[in-house]
Length: 623
Image 1 (cartoon, one colour):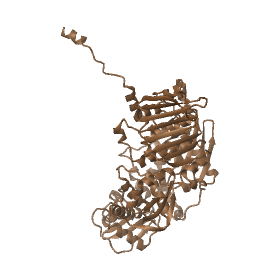
Image 2 (spheres, rainbow, N blue to C red):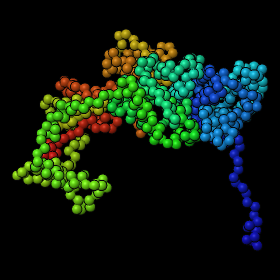
Image 3 (tube, rainbow, N blue to C red):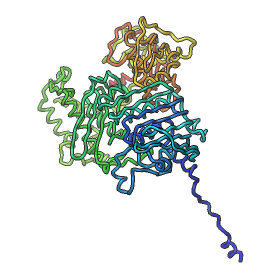
Image 4 (cartoon, rainbow, N blue to C red):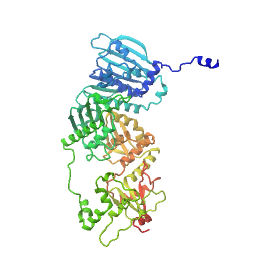
């Protein structure tokens, strides 16, 4: 009976459907992560509506207001209400439509997500309608709906983001950081659609005013007039895909990843794979530590890609990545060659190479016989040698060093002492005793310093970075930084995103010796710089500092001031390849060993290596 009653007990169901408002807030966590996310979605909706004029207005870096006004086709009253339902979309009717998407938005999540975490007002009107529709939504619920007078198109306002989710609002960054993200999203959409007028107004001040035009005009509008004569056209068409756009000439390459934009079917994407294809095409044309600028548009059949692999749709999958990679690389190489930018091949031998024994001296018959009879030679000359591995114990490849030892008649092959291959240099932490002997610069990169029981090999750039880093750190934490006043104030004009960033950094820059003042829209005046900045290089120094700060990377999270100090030290340091005289080398070494941590650069690399006398003796078999 007990068993029967056990089975008769009612079982309580525990799985329930979430209420719509909670489900929308969860979805909003994927789609609307910050004001910039809403900007992206609203701008793309305006583009899909066929607008030719799109205006973006933000207050308080989007936290108080994000408003997008367009002159698109507008909506009916029923469509205006339906647009805020989850998965309500005009782009998909059947499963086949999912594989032929050419519009920006299609999943019908954006407006529902925005309405779940903000107070939303919508005004919309079609050209054929006499009156428009006004809808007010809060917490996913319509609280007001009425007819209204309105211009053709749509105006949608998102106010007080995350007003009903305070915990998420607390995770938003500073206004400057959020504004930078908004500008980034705005620029991506504006570059993708140069035939549309775009404007961006922040707290009543117009940041961007972009007249409709062609791709090159839009790029110059955004990246600056300096790019006007520095762009190379890319245009290749095939049955599989088309690629158009512009690449920057080698002189526009930067030390950090800056102005790089990929668009697939007019959608901005992030792709390390395609970025590698561009870098490979520029190989040998720009320095290895520099990154080329580009704005490239790829157009191909939507069925060849999957754009629904990430909530922001900025990551996509190609059906055949290898074809895309090869095509991008080939198109850029063709453009570079067409504009006579690719370097010509020089088949003449360098004088240094010509002087090597392997080139200048004859290969005697004894040396030929010794080489051919060696096991190393046989291993590389036998059929299928790439798949041939000798057993470990019987292998004679362990005597490979003998191949490089002279085997002239009468000479006995010397036995190689394995101890010689012990690393001969190490970072030292003990006190270094310097001598007063002359210093020697090697390859215009290293300084050879004689010490009491050996010598040091000092990397001049890393050593100078350590010196500058400690100097800037001390300056930043003192009451007053050392500033050299500019004889004539220098004007500096930046693109919108960089202007926002510089405004954010002004207090920190002042702490390390910069005196920079805002001077109208996106303009600044440099009144003074830290003492280490070379006169005449002030403008470039600030521009490079901004660029380095934007792409500062570290596993450790540093404050803005610490990041700036590290960027400044790297930027102002003596670079490899710069010749130094005795006085300069002596001053550098003295300053290095006056530092609190002379043996490490700010990023943790060694500033010098120590070669002790006993290590040298071992290398030459004297021990």
